[in-house]
Amino acid sequence: MTTGLERRDLLRAAAIGFPAILRGAQDAKPIRVGLVGCGGRGTGAATQAMKGDDFAHLTAVADIDLEQINQSLERLKRAAGDKVKVEDGGKYIGLDAYRKVIDSDIDVVLLATPPGFRPSHLRYAIEKGKHVFCEKPIAVDAPGVRHVLETARMAKEKNLSLVSGFCWRYASQIRAAFEQVRNGAIGDIIAYYANFYTSPVKPIPPADTRPAGMSDVEWQIRNWYNFCWTCGDSIVEQAVHSADKIAWAMSDQPPQSCVATGGRQIPANGGNIYDHFSANYLYPNGVRAFLACRQIDGCFNENGDYVLGTKGQLVIRGGVPRITGETNWQFEGQRNDMYQAEHDALFASIRQQKPINDGAWMATSTMLSMLGRMSAYTGQQLTWDQAMNSQEQIFPDKLEWSGSLPVAPMPLPGKTKFA
Image 1 (tube, helix red, strand yellow):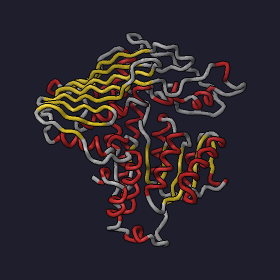
Image 2: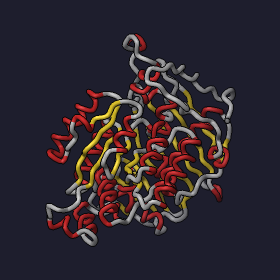
Image 3: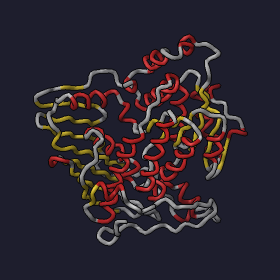
């Protein structure tokens, strides 16, 4: 797979169909890029996109805030210079700004808004024939996941690339480790334990700091990490990276069921997400996977993976994989920049006219973390089919920038019902 290659190798591969790129020909066709969501992750993705192809140009951007757009463009210009070609007419603001970027004369769109918006943004981009880099996770509820699966099928039919922001799939050291596992280095997998213990990502400010006249919708979008309808909760927004590695190790086959716990230990200050989860997934043949996450200050922090097999174990801590047992192995190759590798792969696929479609497995990984959330919220053991067919729609049907939007109550296990 090209995602494990260094950028120079990707460009060399791209030369099969487009030798002008390597010769630096000035008549090589530019790839025009649009950015939707100008926060830190969006700005990072755009920086990497500009490095992903010698003739990639950023021409249009969207956000809810002009100041955020201008700050993002300043950073991008320092990183990418004259490859940033966004004029004032290419800056779009508001909840419908994504449509204006996608409708502009671009070839690729980078989707980096809060996850709740992802299904509608992705569908519109594919309908308009754009290649897409889609940040993780891909939805906040099961209807959204099903919507994205349909969109991914549309992308395949249209020969459009759809590259996911599940960056560990593009990390050279993790790819090498999982290749060892697939080749039998630890035998058959018995259990997988992953954790994501960290501090709060974006704590909500005190309610008395909310500007007078600011609507519920605006306040919640500006503090998107604290509301389930925008972020999907911490197990879905952040720990989904760990869920993705579990899904990858299990060949992207879903579990049979899950039972999970979770709750809110530290006051939510107006939000409605949990600050800790622990999910126990049952796979065929009695194989178990465990995912634990926590976002509380002053606690033990770790982001690790422990894969137990019949012949040994794989441990990934600090991004460094090691295998012990009948086979002893440690990654000694060159670690790539996994964030950059995503974009190298995307732009190489466009130049080679060999589309990449990450749609199916990025949906599976998102649903895996969402299954844990559903089980923790309700206190019930749930099957994969129950989760996939859930009718609970968390993301609102209609949003108005100046509209009211009461915060849903914090879920209570044993009382909150599965829908």
